[in-house]
Image (cartoon, rainbow, N blue to C red):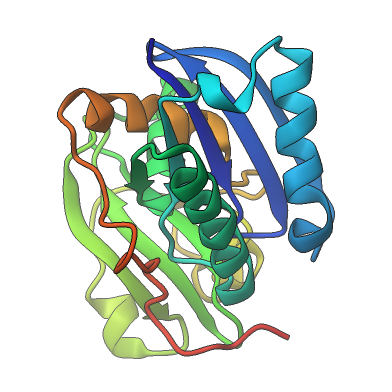
Length: 225
């Protein structure tokens, strides 16, 4: 049985999901800033209980691997590692931005197929965590910190249509609002649902993390408020 618990704590959203053989069983998302340390374990326990599963039923734990909030990622990783050590099951890491792009694809059918997707997570000041991926899921530019007030960054973006989405959009709009090639969707948060879907493929290939050495992809130094 391949029951995978997925944890997403890269932003203010505290999200947990269960997937069985790649199919979603249940999920819970709490949109409350700085709620991870207090609510993550109770959410996990409630989700398992309400789905009639025990901890020992888990085959793996999947974690949102970042980038994102330093504190959120650290808490999620600590909980995931604790479960994996205690149950002697593997840990799977899925990139936060890749999961966001995977989740948005079904909802952008009205856009041109050559539109490039740019998930955007607030990285404080005038910066976002982002990457560039096409509609087929192929990564064109891997995860990086984008300095929005840098002319070099703005001039280096592809010339075709772009879609920015995520909690980094409000500040992104300040620099790109007049660009007709760029569209925005604000109300998008990372979700454990997409983490779970992508984790199943890794589980089948046994692409697991080393529990002792694993750390999330922070990309930049601690900047949480």
